[in-house]
Length: 144
Length: 427
Image 1 (spheres, one colour):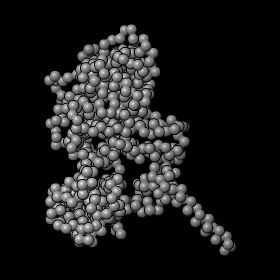
Image 2 (tube, each protein chain N blue to C red; image 1 turned 180 degrees about the horizontal axis):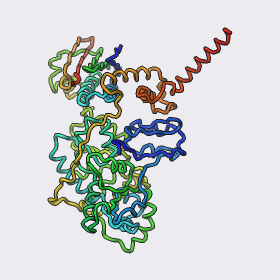
Image 3 (tube, rainbow over the protein chains, first blue to last red; image 1 turned 135 degrees about the vertical axis):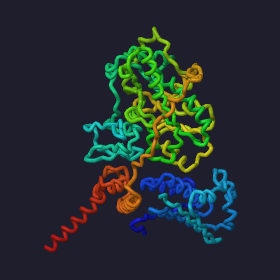
Image 4 (cartoon, one colour; image 1 turned 90 degrees about the horizontal axis):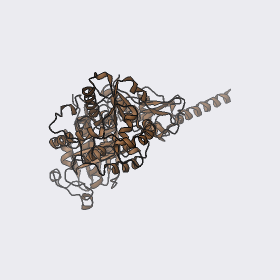
């Protein structure tokens, strides 16, 4: 699918496997370094993607992530077939979380996932349908 | 001296071209080419793992011979604290220090003494710079090098304070010049080192513009010389030691962090563990910590590849030696701390980059992915690269070929022989 100037990297995020959560974002991070992307941008992408990846594991029985890198921007599309987000505005509030207690006891579920994803990206679009799934698209622009 | 230097050398006649070192290297810096292990020096962080793993003893660290002492009119030995952990039943550090003088050194200056000053300056720095928390220790040169080439976002967290050995070197040189009246170049400051990374740090320092160390001897070479001299020293031990518990503690993992007198630290050792911590740190997973101590060797400096004793035993021995020492023997007491700080900028060196610009890098990364699809993903190492992916990157960089993969080559030969046999039938 990649054309000459872009590369698409696809990852499957397994459900309920915390030992593997973060694998995709760390793989992307290492590839971006090899592509010579600005360290500051790598940091944004890897934090935002890590948060999204963890969300997919906690809330959505896993899913699929497509990362497209071009000289202009990095786009991450995180797609799951989970329960969907009931109230996106509420979910975006810092500190709000629906993570169950067993997840919180692992140190997750602080309610900072979505707010951090927004904070570290230039653009974030959430497309969610209850009972069908959620697609989060995030973009980080390359610096001139 | 180029920007990159490695202290690891290959004894070509002993290298069998096996895959042990390429598999173990944490930065994938080694390839087997034409049957011999070759190090890409830009990628090497001098951790010494390849020296440790090589079953044929074909890897060696470069260090100086004791003959280097003859080059100077006056010499000072700088023993690393890990040296004291090498000996059985040692009760008094002064025995080791007296033996060093009997070995021919005019004076000794303990690195652990300078370490106590570094601890004091670090305590203050960490307390005053919470915007940089967690601050990462810079005493292990392999770790600093690793961060410089692979963790650009963590450079700002580095503790910008000289390693104890460098502070010890400048203090020892000043002291010797004052005492003897000799010019700088006639005084030899010789470090007794547990690891080859220190040798690299002397030739190619990071954070400081130059090192005052004039020579590096390996603990494992000094050890057999010292043993008989220590026996001779027992009856006329000189009181030479200048260090307390804090200084000696630096010899093993947790010692530096412990000296900050804060509970809020993490200490990791062993290069793979260090990398794991740095990866997590880069993703902002440790926001509650003040300080992170990292040592490339398991156990800390006592685990250095130039030591002789088992690192964990050496750690026990250091603990025993520390027991009756005062907490610290060195204090700044108002002295200037200016020269304990780094005076040179540390910049990111993107040595692993695949292209000159974004466009080229993206194209090359796509090619790497395509090649990886073709390869069997056995990571067998037969091509001389540690993984199929590393081979793909080598091909893209123009230093390897697809048919270096024996599986691809085998398929190619099969195809060729099939075609030839068809040709035979037609005839």
